[in-house]
Length: 113
Length: 115
Image 1 (cartoon, rainbow over the protein chains, first blue to last red):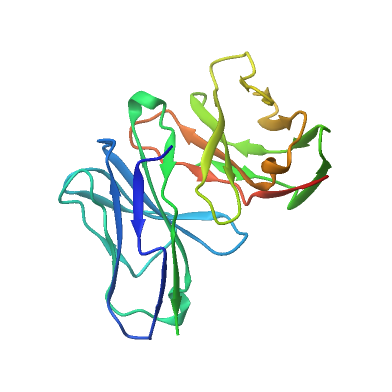
Image 2 (cartoon, each protein chain N blue to C red):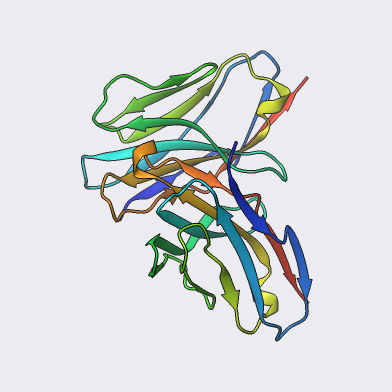
């Protein structure tokens, strides 16, 4: 159903590497979000955006950064990955006219060795 | 800021039976939305059902219905005629009806469905 895509699906990297998790949506939604989720646990909002050139930090402090240069694209970057960054990262988007229903991507499972 | 509490880490139900997942929330606002999301194993999270706080009528979507008690700040999900495909983690969530509000999720309830 969802036209929101995340790549890669799985990523295993070494400590200190710079990584970018990609998220794109084709629905023209203004709002986009990044959540962090450990296995079987709740979702924590780490970043969100209300439109182009708008980014905000979420409830959970994160060492990652985001950018929103185009409506459809909301990448998340870790400048220097650490084992504590190992988690699942979920991207989502929403539109006011759909009652703020969130559409989620399939997630990126990140493992930092 | 709103909080969402799901007190049942795990629930079990047999096929064709009915199960109710509990959720309570806390907010000082009167205008907000409540949601139930489903996250199947290794699959995308999807919206199950949505309730607007100003509507007294409980939302229903096929086999899924809610019991919304605004005064008690309770928002339970009832799944009727449970199916194996209903097995998933279910998250309750709340969002204020404000353009700059974000969604707050509960910790989730894992639903197990047995044949």
